[in-house]
Length: 385
Image (tube, rainbow, N blue to C red; front, side):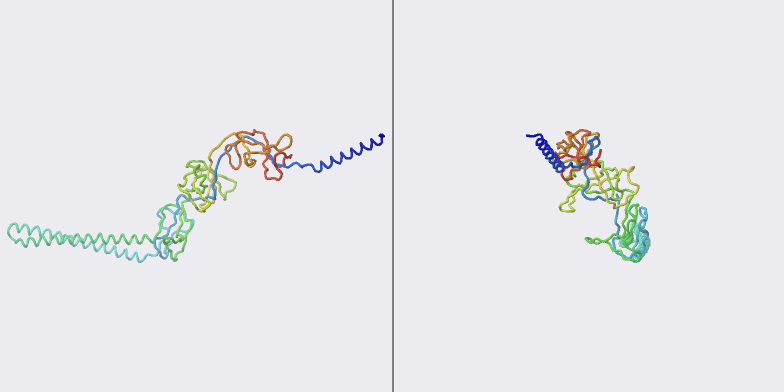
C-alpha cells in the first residue's frame, strides 16, 4: 500500500472520529441544576400545630340582654366605652312597674300602722283580762266575765299577729316589684369594654327565646385578659398537656411569633365537620413578651413544642425522600442516594442520627425534573452554602 493511500485512510479515520466525538458531545446528557444545602449542626424541635385557624378570646365575655322585652328608655353607654363593675348600661321603660312598687310601699306603710293599732289594742285587752282575773279571784266578778275578758285578749292578740303577717306580705310584694324592675335594667357584671350594642333609645329590645338566636343587646368583654383557642387534630391530642411551651402567631402580625404556654386541653372531641375531629386547646401568651395590643377575634396559629434537641446534625426536611433517603452531592459530580436514620423533625429541619455528617451537601430541589441518583449535576447559583 502506497504512502499516499495510507495518509488518506488515516485522514478519513480522523474525520470519522471527530464527527463521532462531535455527535457524542451534542447528544451527551446535560448536567441537572440542583439546589444544595450544606449539613450543619443546630437546634431541632418536634412540634404540632392547629388544623384550623385559632381565635383570640377574652377571659371574660358576656352577651347581655334583658330578661323581658321592652322599649329602650336609657342607653347609658356607647360602643368602645370602658365601664366599671355594677355600672348601669341600659334601662327599658318600666313606669308601670315603678307605679306598682310605689303602691306596694304605700301598702307596707299602711300595714305597719295597722300593726301598731292592733297590737296596742291587744296589749290593752291583755291588761284588762289580767284585771278581770284578779277581780274574779277576789269574788267581785263572775267566771263568765273572766272568761270573756281572756277570749277578748286572745282575739286582739291574734289580730295583732295577723296585722304583722300583712306587713310581711306587703313587703314581699315590694320585693317582687323590685325583681320585676331588675328585669328591665342591665348592669355591668364586671369591668370591661363595650364591644357592641344592638338597639337605640326608643327601639324595642327583645330577649332571645329558647331555640331562637337573637343578637344580644350589649356585648361586654374584658380585654385585659386574653388567650388563644385553637383546634388540634384528635390524633395529636394525647401529646398535649397543660404547661407545654407554644409559639403563637397572628395573621395581623405577620413574620412574628410570641412565646406562650398551654393553659387547658378540652376533655372532649369536637366534631364540627364529620371528617375533621379536633380537640380545642387554650394557650396564654407570656406577659412580658406579648404584643402590645391584641383584638378579640384575631385569627391565630398555635405551635406546641413537644421536644427540643440542641447542637445536633440536622438536614432540611425538604431534602428527605420517601423511606428516609437523601440525594448527596458526590465528589465525582453525580448525585448519590443515601439512606439516613432520623430523630426529631418539624417542617423545617430533621435530626440526623446516622448517615450524614456536618459539611455534606444534600439536594433540596427534589421537585425539579430529572433529579435522581446517578445523574450529573451542577450547583444552582441560588443554592445555600
